[in-house]
Image (cartoon, rainbow, N blue to C red; front, side, top):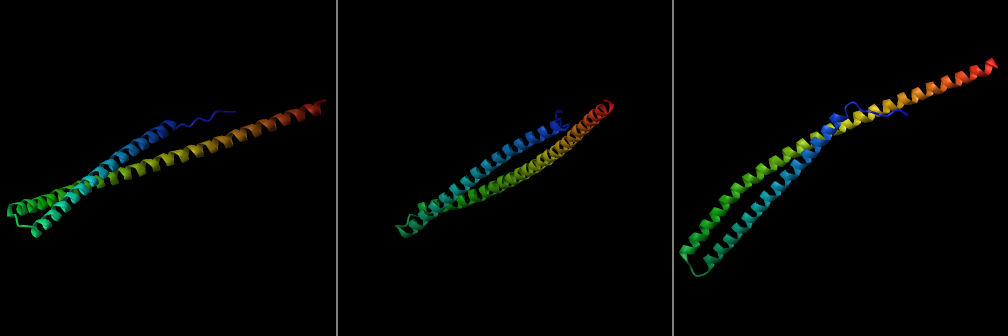
Length: 149
């Protein structure tokens, strides 16, 4: 039986490599997003702790200096939280773009795999037709041999 050879196999191989690369980039972007979100959560927790401490200071014996320091710390945490929210948004956008590239790479690979499947089906039909023709010729030859005797 003839061997199937896909003429565009090198393109399919490249598409597979591109898909793998896109998967890696997407995983990295997701990891960065998770890290940035964790930083944001940490900042929010610290801000909440400072606010709780500030509320406690208002209830206890008034220490104006500590109240000002704690209030400043709360404002500083709010500022850092806003900055971190920008970082999270940037990381989320990067992850979304990586996901889009991954989806495109998967789609390209699937398209080329479908083309390969179609080429293989055509190959199988051609082989079957050639075998059928060969069998017909063999039968005709044998039938012709039987008539001569």
